[in-house]
Image (tube, rainbow, N blue to C red):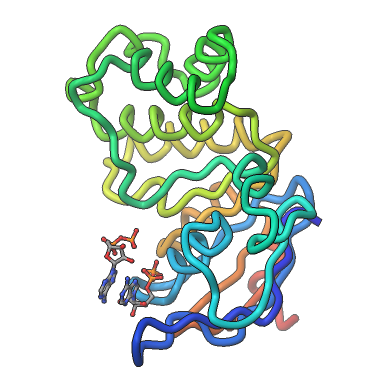
Length: 219
Ligand code: ADP
Ligand code: ADP
């Protein structure tokens, strides 16, 4: 099991963002986490990546507990936050090299992730010169640096134009081949384009969990 979530609840003051959430994601699955704005998607992703803690419940990522084994969880995950802070004045390679240092990964891995995310033609530019689609690829490349088993992508295509959208979906499918991918979106077409399975969240509760083939059947 790559991700195991058990009875997680989380409130911000009186606002219940997650209400007794449970599900599991198998190794190698590409799962879409679908729900409208405010449903609780980012909150659950921040809990899985150990940025915030649940009020109740527990979760494991790659067999590691999100509370007692935070470092191991972080090393297992490549995370693309919804609002990825990029340093617009840095060259693509400089930015990746900085993070490669943090993760202690080799320089050749930087070239690998540039290839994997289709950034070769842009890698000599400053991040500020790139289109939104290519900036998202820099975020993806960064998430891939330490070759994590699990990718957690928070609304990776929101705000992209139709061409950029198709390209980044292909990149995600491609880099996700040998990984578990858990990605949030508020667009059903996104799930249909990329995912094997969809977990639907609304008002902090799971309202559906289906394989894509039987999405439109009764069970
Ligand atoms: P989604 O990612 O699906 O848009 P979020 O997890 O961001 O949903 O938000 C779930 C709910 O929790 C929303 O009502 C949101 O306004 C609220 N929320 C999220 N973060 C905070 C916070 N730091 N403080 C207060 N409320 C928050
Ligand atoms: P994200 O969806 O990645 O959390 P947002 O732009 O929605 O990004 O939120 C930016 C910051 O504000 C985050 O730290 C988030 O937790 C917090 N936040 C989101 N919704 C609320 C809210 N209703 N009240 C207070 N803080 C919030």
